[in-house]
Amino acid sequence: MASDDVVCAVDVGTSAVRAALVSAEGRRLCHAREERGPDEGAETFDAELLWDGLCRVLRRITSQAPARCRPRCLAVAGHVGQVLVDERCRPLGRAGGWADSRGVREVAARWPDAAAALRPAGRPAVTGGAVPLLHWLKDNEPSLHRRVRWVLSPKDFLVLRLTGTAATDVTSAAYTLGSDVTRRVWDPDLLAVGGKGPEHFPPQHAATDVVGTVTRAAAGATGLPSGLPVAAGGPDGTVGAAAVAGSAPGAVVDVAGTTDVLTRVITSPGQRPAAAVLNPFLVAGLWTCGGATGMTGGAVAHWARLLGLGDAATALERLGPQMRALPPGSAGLSMSPLLTGSRFPDWNQQERGGLWGLGEHHGAAHILRAAQESAAYVVRQAVDTLLAGEAPGPPVLLTGGPSRSLDVAQLRADVLGRPVHTSAEADASLHGAALLALVAAGLEPDLPTAQARTRPAVRRFAPRAALTARYDTLYRQWQQTKG
Figure 1 (tube, helix red, strand yellow):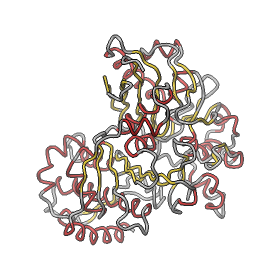
Figure 2 (figure 1 turned 90 degrees about the vertical axis):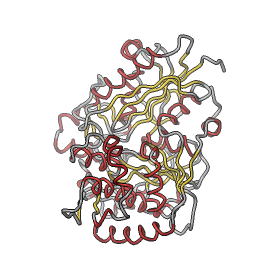
Figure 3 (figure 1 turned 180 degrees about the vertical axis):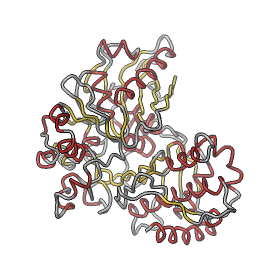
């Protein structure tokens, strides 16, 4: 491989869009980031604004690129959601984010035995996705429903704008609620619930398949070279987990952000716990089980804004010393962070957050610490589900923005009662997108090889026995109070 070969990696999260040029050796040469608005991402978002944001970050990195760099491929990792477009690839209304619950209750009510009906989809419950959204649209906005040409994930929409080709990957397809996840094909019976057929859903590919090339129009908008190959890509949580843990079965990866996405690679669909989502993995012949929790890091950010402390990073830097001095339990203050409903493992989208035990002696530091503790409790529910009966079980590999904080990592270890390893690569989804692009470009033979060559270093945090015992009591109390 030539030393000037590079790939372009994109990570579309609910809080920001990131892009980077990465060398064939895995070294990040330049990077750009653009924040998304507070109303863009979790429940609904404007797909045109997302495209505009992507164009801006791509123009920034292409303008910064060293003169000899030769882009070989682009891959996108993106958050879960659904974008409906018409024949001219224009979005129809606001797109749905990962927390979009339109149509969920109506679709769930169709099946007396939802578990049996959803078995091909690998879902324990109706959790949102394209099929419920289409069902809702058919009843509430039938004129828009009739105009739907393609049903896409946010990542697929960007690939369509870049290449003119409608395509998806097998993992993103699973989140529609319309794919047979073990056969990795569209299920006509599931899709029919939304009033559309397989012809409205793009072909399914492996994440590392090249599905198109950058058009002249997209090249002009982004600064990318026309004809640049574009890979199918994948969901940000799955791509991030693969980047830091590889494809070896067993390890639990927590990609932390607005929500925490818990993933465990398994070799057979039968190994999935009943409450977990089953997805095809990025590597053929493997699956993952787990799912996204309800809001965790997003609740910390929400409380920071409500308290007038700015963004979460600024608030935590300002109040960090006070928060670290607090005993477990934040002096009797606790909360549920689930502002947009619970997901894995409880799957109750009607649940909402709460705050209890608030007294006049509590201040902003208590509230933010309670938000961090409650986020850790949510993650413990998910980890205990994935590792039921395994004591002590494998360590939990924590990555994503919160993993940069030594305090958060130690808190997670104490609450989980398990070793926590943090990855030196906090931007795991962006790193994973680069690995997909390296494989798609032919610069690496396969994803496991690419990951092994660029495996990030880890830092280890052991649970502290006295604090773990105290947090175990507090966790049980939190479960009872939350209901």
